[in-house]
Amino acid sequence: MTEQTGPLPVVAIVGRPNVGKSTLVNRFLGRRAAVVQDTPGVTRDRIAYEALWNGKRFTVVDTGGWDPKASGLGASITRQAEYAMKTADVIVFVVDSQVGATDTDLAAARILRRSDRPVVLVANKVDDERSEAGAAELWSLGLGEPQPVSALHGRASGDLLDLVLDALPEAPREQEEEEGPRRVALVGRPNVGKSSLLNRLARDERSVVDSVAGTTVDPVDSIVTLGGEEWRFVDTAGLRRKVNTASGMEYYASLRTEAAIQAAEVAVVLLAADEVVSEQDQRVITQVIEAGRALVIAFNKWDVLDEDRRLQLEREVERDLARVRWASRVNVSAKTGRGVDKLAQHLRQALDSWETRVPTAELNTYVRALVQETPPPARGGRAPKIKYVTQADVRPPRFVVFSTGFLEAGYRRFLERKLRERFGFHGTPIEISVRVREGRERPRG
Image (cartoon, rainbow, N blue to C red; front, side, top):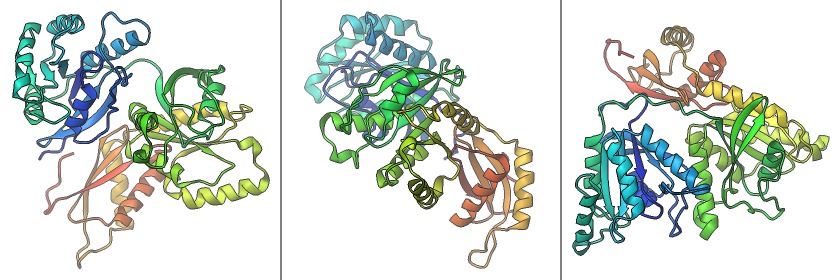
């Protein structure tokens, strides 16, 4: 399988509310990532996920329900879906075969027929052969053959994925840079002060604030001016101990928190400075790192700390947050406003690092000197030789090391530490993968 680097092709899933788009996304991903609930309008934003089918990676964009006549919140969902269509390489248009083509579906089809993107028409909720007649009626939409699928039960989903892959171009089209404020996920366990901080930033009572843990159920987007620049903050429900121990709306709130991290570029993880750094705090930080997002750690309630607690907190940070020494750290008080204005510089620094690309020549000159001074340890009597290093991607920075043998985890951590010392990367995770290539030939970057 050839390694894909650079941007992945994009598949947008569109359709009116409650036709099963998120269920189909989960079927594409092979896991329960998108929020699925029997209430129309649960997905309110574009949410992107990385998918893999038959050795090909691509991005799936789940959108809110498409309604050309919508107003208010519905209108913003429509804009999201239209943007997804404009930037996608393939559009998957989902229709509920049990309901048939509605006026909204017909209006959507008219727009899609004018699109220069390939469109795959999906007749969803075809659970058995008896239901296929309803699917055939969707030929009337003028978008070609309807593909009968049951997203819920997985019926014919593999055939659909094959069709989608066939429709993808060899290379993704040039993506337009999304305009607008940088996206910030405000995350943390319940009751650390996320809503209070957002209200302080927005200078109004945008979010419901209550001392009962877990008051916020739905993310609330707020455009905030900070450091002379606009930012889009998403205030999210507090993460529970484990997603599967929560029930009902709490369960979906937990999933939406994860989705908010995925939809953001940088995450502010809020910790309560007057409480011990907990396992839940660690889990939130891990989620941000695994999602590959830039990271700022903010310690809230700084105004209530005495000298003893500050010293104790420093020891906790040294012990419990040692693996994220690279993260930006800022001390704030949502209540008094102390340190809140400093957030902007930390966000900018983390995003700059997240988007940094090191020139290949400079990277290899540095790594060659480093390896000469500290070569990788021998394994099985033979010391591996590092031939070449390239930066495969940004957002976050990803490096590929071409070596004649396996590199121990300790040596990979050493390389990461040294790359950070030399090139910064303050506030962003970086990934280092190793390709073992025997022989003398120098790999091409």
